[in-house]
Image 1 (cartoon, rainbow, N blue to C red):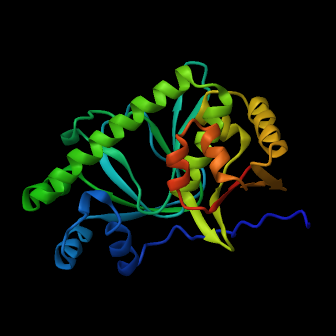
Image 2 (cartoon, rainbow, N blue to C red):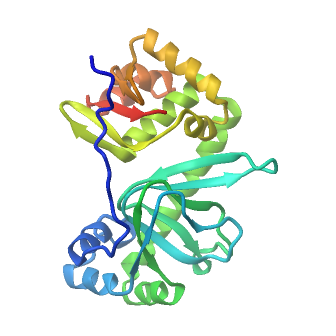
Length: 264
């Protein structure tokens, strides 16, 4: 098999997003679920778009919370830094995903830093404009409460995993989570269209790049993944789900697609 990556090359320009794309992306945002087309168009007019090249910081942990953001194109990485300067990756976000915060949602400062992982176009709204949306559309306020509650649950689950789960389970869970949020169906597989290094996986799972390499080699020997140059394919989703600690019933309920991730 040729040693080449099956990943689609992303050659995005951090230019202004088209109105059609903006409406399509905002329609995917949980906050705005259920809005009519005219209402969504009105919401769109309150957002501005900003382009970022790879590696550029969008905001920094500890800054005042004054922007709510939506990924329109590209990928965004959420990170925190330890006292020793070590980067901890909290998540990799794709189109349609929310990040950032506003004081009116209960956060006075950003709890993490956001960095453009690839070239990205980001939709941004100010506290004043978002408050106007909440006043005009009470349903959006209810959606906000649901999303915030779900994120709190996910944060608590992450803390539990990092403190109690073995490294193998954490790595398996991270691969599945990335596949679910950033996967792209291609020839019977789910391709993760984002560069993810072993260092990224290590910081996401509270371990080391060497441990991640060992675990990925173990998964290969067990037939759960296959790999090529700079990419990894999950070939047995059910077994990887079990390795992540998911119940068997949950594993069987998942689509029988294969997930593919890229690793450097």
